[in-house]
Image (cartoon, rainbow, N blue to C red; front, side, top):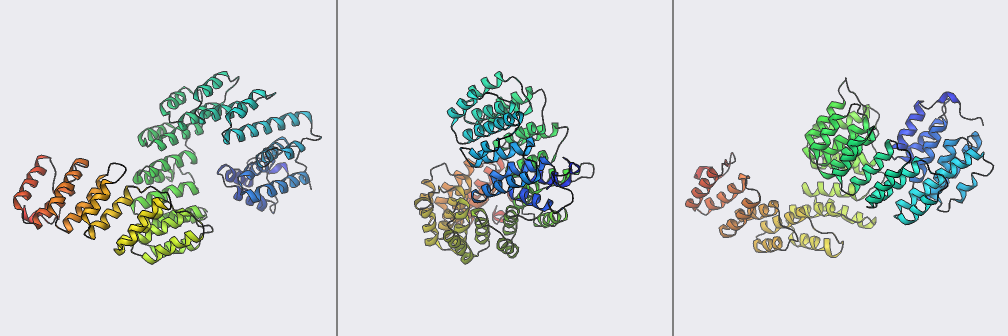
Length: 528
């Protein structure tokens, strides 16, 4: 078979699509696109083949080596085994899949000296990266120092590995020794500093960079996003002169992951404006759907699902799970069930999303059945799973079942209950009249209880008209959230139900002194 025609070119549609799939960490799609391209008269160029080969180690373990071997044979048939890029990529794949990389060495038999040196360097760099990923910094450093030749990739890999391992002084020392640097060199150290939580040092280095690629900007934006500093991320984003899809995605994700849903949708709208127009991808839509879920904006979510189809983005399991979360929170359980049934692979995230929806909407038997399915499938539950199950029990008023479920979190599944789990239990105990038990549960919390837990007990005190405990609980709420007038309203209701009008008046005076207004429609306004 002849070599792939040169006309295919580096920028042919097939080549660009394959490289994009590989860059996005979607190895199956990269391989599928390459196979589809073989039926086209315009073949991918060697760079596309290299991209496919580099993505092969990301395939499931049982498939990666057979695919590498098949592509190896394919390269031989095409006469491209001596091309430096696919050759190096194949050596890289084998070195990742076979620790001894004897197959990679076998590729070099009979190769020209320049190609042999290049491939050995690529193989050494790959081995260096593998050692660092495995956490064997000492062996990596020994390999690095013993390499007969090192390129900028070698130095960058070692600097990044040292920084991520927390050996920042060594990383900086190596960075200063580098005979040449590129943008990736600076990015490696910036990324390592961010990983270790040194955002200020990373920002200082970022500002010193002689030239910044979009990766540099995105690295810093993502670092601020993980730290919750949304404003710093936004300021950097606005400074960017040329924003590509990945930078827009980074900013949308930053807002969505930090609970700034409206801002996330605002940025999404900006990228779709005619004078900007950046075509969204799966990552974009994942963050946008998350923002819709946070807002409970079903209407916009429905538009997003339709828009995905119009721009050719297919629903994969990740996007289906994101939509499941949106539809369950919006009460569209019928649509959520349909999407769940269409999942190719069900994991703890998709099961938990369904269980939370069932818990919110009183579908106890469905929630319990999902939990049983997870157990049969050997899928371990997480904290969100128990939010759904406890909510279902609470909605049904099943105290004993909820108690057993709550206890099993720590005793059987080794999951520490969060604020949300405690709030659900306190609410159920309170509604069941177990006010003292609810109070004891709060006092046993390993961390300081938030206002939401005390608020659940305060609601129970109003339900059961317990003035004495209500006053104690309300004082905790006032201390934690002094600006929230709702707690005053609840205590006022308790006083009004007990006909303690003097206390109602005193509470009103306290609110006025603190500049708080009563909530419209509150049931105790008429007695004030």
